[in-house]
Length: 95
Length: 495
Image 1 (cartoon, rainbow over the protein chains, first blue to last red):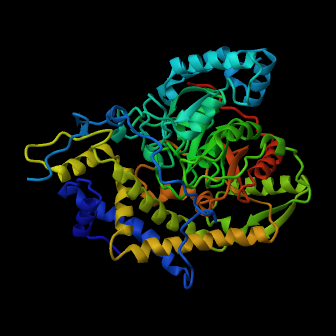
Image 2: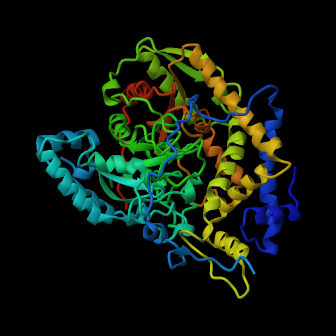
Image 3: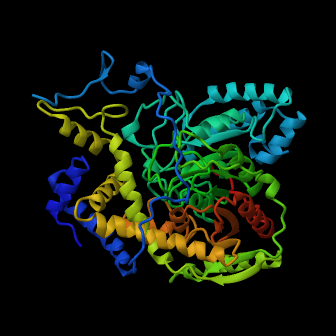
């Protein structure tokens, strides 16, 4: 399967990465090369094989659904590029 | 005695306990070595104040007789580990100026054991790379050079700074992380020891996530005993990581008996790749002979799906990465792009991520996005997860046959030159992981041990793969191999 320019543009948008129009052909070529490498997987007979979902056959632990932490808005916001009045600030999303 | 920074962890520990040396002295020796090694670009952020403070605290504990194995030992921490108040940016511009308010469990455990943090180590951006060339800090440089040649070589990756720092005696040990070979390949390229424990042995909490079902932390050290001591301090159950194993951590150092008589070592025929350099082939044969001489039984084994490990990995890892890296959105931490008039939130995301992520990271995020997108999920992602199940089954079958450990080469070549692979296609770089990546897919422990030098005087490593949760046994096999190989070479100092 090879990726054309419009697919590359769509993938870049889905990934929320701005790619200039003039860079799309190169990107499409690179993605196609990696996908061609993955095509080898089609040689494998996977009939009846369950996809691996956990690395070790261990039941994940559960914990009580209780608040264990919190009350530190200053720490949460300390690395924000734009924080105002105890909130993360972003460009307007609703008109 | 040679410089204090050249001691093994074990020797330093014993000298500290006897009061022959102080942690403050060890720490100053390492800080001086780091200052003199700018050309290696191993340390991206130095923390001498923290180091001196912790060394003083460690000396106090040592005097009080309360001294775990790592107490007072100066170590470097890979930049992937979040360290409170200290830049932790996974070698990415998107995390520039990020100073976590918290500490990763592994680095906290090391601190609790009394280890002294010297600083944060260079690496490939988000641990995506095999040469340390994707770092926003610039390349880390291998202290080893080819005989009669000044060309700078890669220390490998992604834990390239960790490998260079340990090989050049800038610290006694360093943390690394390994998603497809990122501890074992750089260890092999720099003539040191690196172990990736069983998935779940070390908590992943506070380590910047790349591919969560593959990532594991581990130590990178001068020898196998040091790996056992440092791994001990890094392991253990952590309620903050739901995949962390609630199993007791045995005494790894005590497992180093040097006796592997009657043990079965598997030699997987599928690891004999077409075009494998003769020197790697010879190293492997020599290593096999050493294990046999030590009394082990050598068994020819088959791991039939080996060939499909790399393509499966390059579906699974980017898929998980695309999901994990979605958090870098310019809102909560790190870089945010300057916006133009009228730009909305989508432009903010797209510009921020285009500016903040390097090329390889962008490529992997987009591959991951593609293989998870509607219409391709089954064809790529689910198929890769099925192949992954088959790869794991291959290992389970040989362990069920009674195999105790598997011996393979660690890498398909010695360290290559920085810049040599720049124009190669990404797949050529990915092939560096061909011997190591199966271990991550199956969640097994694997260790790289230096075993010889190539014709140009560069170190080469062998890999041993163990049964799940049997790191002690694996370390013992590695210890036997280390003693038989007698690798003592060090890089000639040029930096």
